[in-house]
Image 1: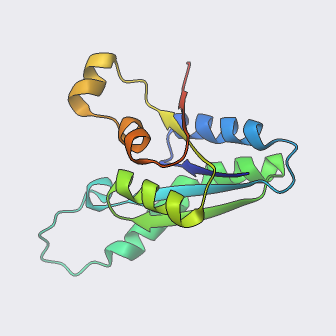
Image 2 (image 1 turned 135 degrees about the vertical axis):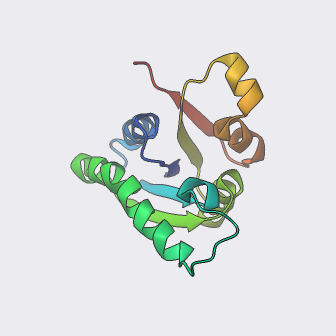
Length: 143
């Protein structure tokens, strides 16, 4: 079994990692792919800048920090994992990596927006569900 878990450093994403670890428990051939996606919006960058900036280097450094807790959880559980950093539109990138990696399932956290806020603001989880060609499990944080 191969699972893709998008990770943004939030508690919701960490809940999804723990759920994915439960799903693969006892499956020695299982692998969890931890993915952090960065883009201009997540990095707080403008499309117009006077300063030369290596956005991919900045994105990679930010991804390493965002993935740290998820990687630790996989190591502690003794589950094989791969961590990946990507740059681009979040939903499209999650879908692309899922296809390229031939995953069996995507497991991702939700931030628990109200129904109205979710409709107005949209939801990464909802868009991934519509785009994905594999099952998607949305893990709601119950805190």
